[in-house]
Length: 348
Ligand code: GDP
Ligand code: ZN
Image (tube, rainbow, N blue to C red; front, side, top):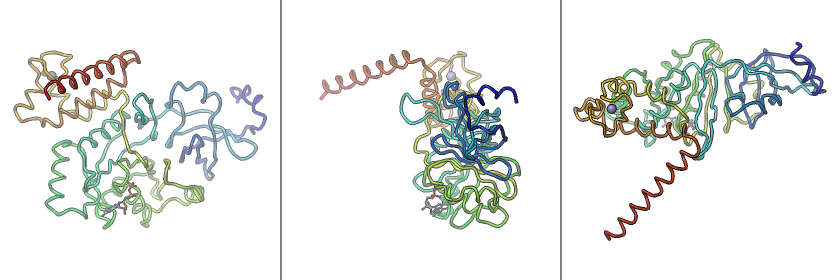
């Protein structure tokens, strides 16, 4: 291949042998790539490292990449194939950039647990990054064994009222309830991810799926993953029916990047109602002739849903601001707090 001749001259240990494979694990910028029967450990080329403007230019679990073998048996990732979808969140920290959770996912299972973790607002947040990334969502309500039948029905209703069109699977990793329904969703060649707060039971559900006979893990991947610890980073496993699962562990915080399209799709009912607002740039907060506020007043739209929509829109817009705009906004906010405190003090 002629396009490599330059880099070959610089990197004496390259062998010229290449393969195209999928990133199945990522661990501090070392990647494990399934190339046919073998798994090769690789870093990224200098070109990828220095030409990427942000994290989106780096490989992620699920990506298809071209790897060149080095003489020591490891590899260099030369090229990322175009992605069909990408799951992105804002990395922790107020001014942090984007972080890719996984690439090329077809369906995302949002796992919630029926105990104290249950939060429709957090569900909206997950759905936003899922839709924004071009992925289709399903919802799993786990730990239903801890709930009375009435509680189960009540929570299911709450989810359905908030998101009528998204399939919901009632599950328990403990009793295996819902396992068959989840299995039925898994198609060969498709990639699924499990996303949700830590502790909701993602690993337990995945273990249930991979532990059962029909969905045992493909021996290829298990052999390769031997000796690699699996708790703190993302990993893709292939099931014997040819479907692939990605666990995204340890998400304590899912901040939004610019996600306006994802928000509009998550809150498709609000987007629809907003068509009837008097002003095209209506913010649905105080404008006259706002159809969205009217819908809340008429009881057609839940006030909490609008509130969360506005919160997520605000977060998405804040992310897209230029630095000086953010500083201005932060200063305004600071002034507001100060004024509030002063007024409060005077009153006392
Ligand atoms: P993850 O952080 O989302 O991967 O959650 P884990 O799979 O590690 O589960 C967290 C805890 O919840 C563990 O103690 C599990 O045994 C427990 N757990 C998981 N699923 C269920 C379930 O369906 N019912 C009950 N009662 N406990 C569960
Ligand atoms: Zn409006």
